[in-house]
Amino acid sequence: MKLPVSTEWLLHCAASLAQLKSGDTASAAQLAQYFDLPAAYLAKQLQALVKAGVLAATTGPRGGFRLARPASEITLLQLVEAVDGASSPYECREIRQQGRGALPAEECRTPCILAEKMAEAHRAWRRSLAATSLADIVAALPPSAPSRTRLRLTGAP
Amino acid sequence: MKLPVSTEWLLHCAASLAQLKSGDTASAAQLAQYFDLPAAYLAKQLQALVKAGVLAATTGPRGGFRLARPASEITLLQLVEAVDGASSPYECREIRQQGRGALPAEECRTPCILAEKMAEAHRAWRRSLAATSLADIVAALPPSAPSRTRLRLTGAP
Ligand code: FES
Ligand code: FES
Image (cartoon, rainbow over all chains, first blue to last red; front, side, top):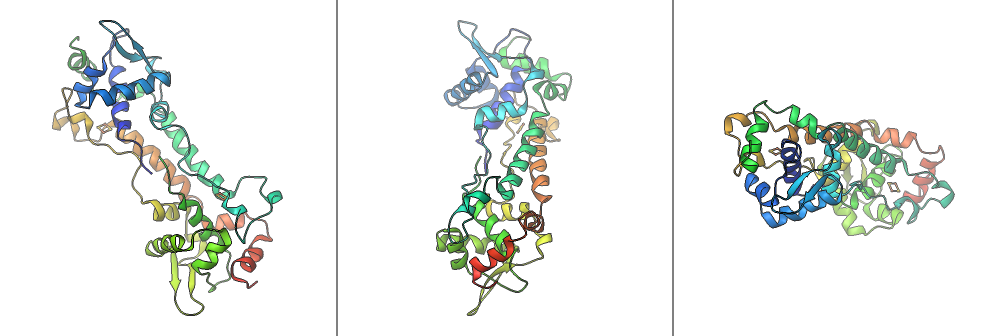
């Protein structure tokens, strides 16, 4: 059970964009340099966050990426699921209905207790990630962090 | 982020073994027929549960698998981690320390807040799975289930 390596990239890119001044943007190239990441692949992943409605992309000479919503309204869950999808890591293929032990269909109208428990664990994971917003992340940084991030990421204080 | 397909197999195999009478065993072939699964591959996976100390394998003409501990002391977490390992799906590669935005090492003595939050979610998932034992699963089945399971799995009531 693995999340893509790019999950870390995009969490950090989104947390960095959350430190820009309102209206400012950073390009894929700037974000790639900031974290020393492959620019083309990162750009593709950033587009996935745009598609998920988490980032907005602006075009033109000063174009780039910014948060599509206030940082307080973007959770870690939304970011992670924009990268990896929202499906549960556990797949129930109704094994209880096959083979010599197959249960009759009328006993399978409610979900299997094992599938239920696995779904419950996934809900606990989702709930935990949904409880933290990008605003919470920025608030946990040292007070000097945002101005340094801005300067190194975009060149503007 | 996907768990192996065999996770469902082994949760169900373990839950079935939890319904046998004390001392009884079921062979890999019996379990494979019971759920219509590929016997050789299932046998390999059952050995992983033996290695993890969850199942015990007995040899001889009446040999097979049984729980290595009381069902109340085997949790879903132990079963899932025996199949898939215990590592977190999120990997932090200390991206904060690379590129133009690299933080100096002295600011990285504590874990990154994003890595922390991802670890917290993994702990919530683990906690949820650790809260359910095989005894809880068997207790949730209809009262007629264990005798049917025994009859169809091993031929003995
Ligand atoms: S039938 Fe899929 S988990 Fe039980
Ligand atoms: S440095 Fe790895 S999650 Fe922040």
